[in-house]
Image (tube, rainbow, N blue to C red; front, side, top):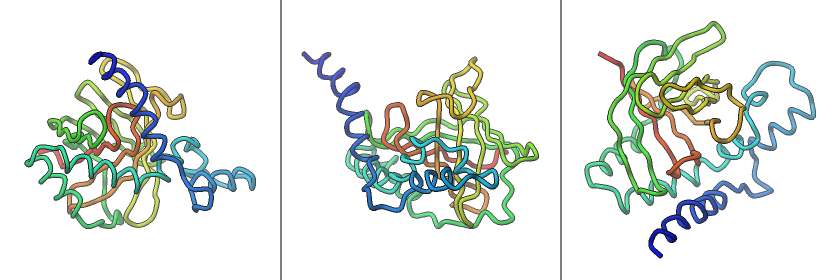
Amino acid sequence: MLIFWRFFMHRILLPIFTFALITVPANAQSLVQEKLDMERAGFEKDTVMQDITYRDAARLDAYARMRTEAFRQARAGGASVDVALLDEIDQRPERSFEDFDLTGKWQCRTIKTGGLAPLVVYDWFRCQVNDDGAGWVLEKLTGSQRTRGRFFTDGDSRLIYLGSYFVKDDRPLRYGSGRNSDQVAYVFRGKDDGWRMEFPAPERESVLDILEFRRAP
């Protein structure tokens, strides 16, 4: 019975709970509606709205509510030292990305909030951001779970990340290949030389993932 209950919680209740959070009211101004309107009008230039999938637009539409729920679960059940870290991250101001160069070598760590475990803080791994001429491209270089993708401007103090999840020794798929690999995040600069990505409704385990960055020594 215990094994069945764990399976039920993981496979059935968590997806239902996530779907309930991600649903956007019909009268809300949303990225999904913006994408639909732009497609009907015809795209005049390459924008994030052209590349983003409808599912990922819906995840960003639900970002604020999912973040609130994820942080509620994390604060209710996380270890005190991890909750203190989460509170510190939550209190950071949103700084401008103007004149800020993301390129170079970074240390990055994942913080999982809500879901199967209330709050999990992982060790630091290696990440790198390059400029391929069309913009910034991120790749997580170490660790078993990795990501690779591209950034798009979404105002002065926020970026949008469209990427692909993959595991060590596999090649990353192109963004748009499907829900098992597609990733979407809002990106914030909270320190002079640090920034973070927040992934609402990730496909695995949690309600919201944070990927935090600091300059590599």
